[in-house]
Image 1 (tube, rainbow over the protein chains, first blue to last red):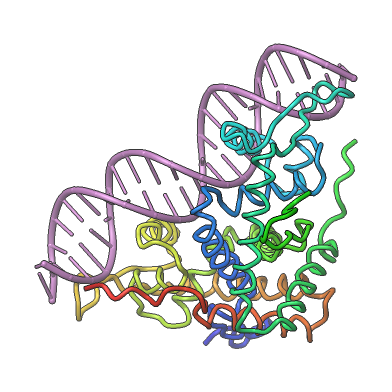
Image 2 (image 1 turned 180 degrees about the vertical axis):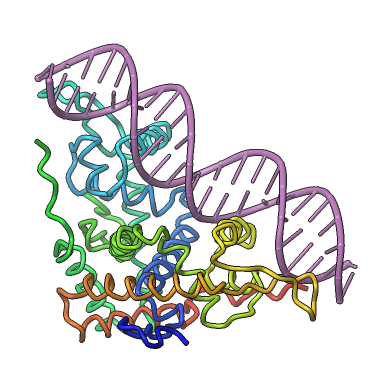
Length: 162
Length: 162
DNA sequence: TATTGTTATACTCTATAACTATA
DNA sequence: TATAGTTATAGAGTATAACAATA
């Protein structure tokens, strides 16, 4: 009796595994779980590795720049970097040009950890996408990049704060 | 100087937006955010809609079955259904065959809410994938389904509890 | 006056353990 | 004894507000 006699279009019955949000979320969770398991011997996590990767790619970024790239709040970044600094994986020092800012860099030990972890992360990704083949895996990557690059068509323009 | 003189392969420098985990996570977060924004006038969320969808697709499932499909803990499902029950969107009743189990069903109001919300959810998905075209959107969906269907090749077989 | 990092606080989601009632 | 639902509790991750130092 759904929508009978009204002008609203019928709702197609969808199984949960046909919903894009479900698919993206569970693919993400599954991959993250496998990555965390593979990184466990190194005592690090996929989340930490994400931060290390940003720091390694462009050394000398401020905390807020790292946080912005990863899409995490600057207050969350404090705790994350606190932990990595306690383990002597990264170091903070005030910028000489703007002493409000903390420049974040990998320590030598952090560089070593990052390279080992990144190698493992790549292996996990390959394993994760093995069943679909490298061609479709490449397409998947490019498609997701497109989705994230293009600002959502229906979204409001980024606010211009007065 | 990375890996110089050792037998470990060099670590390819990857920008964060080339990492599959990053792409999946942020695509998921972006889509969820847009969905939540679109559902806000209905007073519901993408998370609630996920539960409603499972209940709607196969009425009469137990709480644990709904929880298992969505991949959420059964203890989390209690709070989620509590809220939906307080809003008279779903109803729980003990199964006549096994009175330990709660059968979960949509109320008439819940059915109505679900259909409205699912329509909006579909529109958001279409908007979200508009830039890549329906062909690539279909491929994306099928690829993700493949990744989630195939048990990870390297993963240990599901544990056989003694 | 605005910005960076920080702390304190709260809220959500999740995970574990223990309890109850049923089987 | 095992299972379904529940409760209590603790742990992450995130978000907001306020503060100090600096610009």
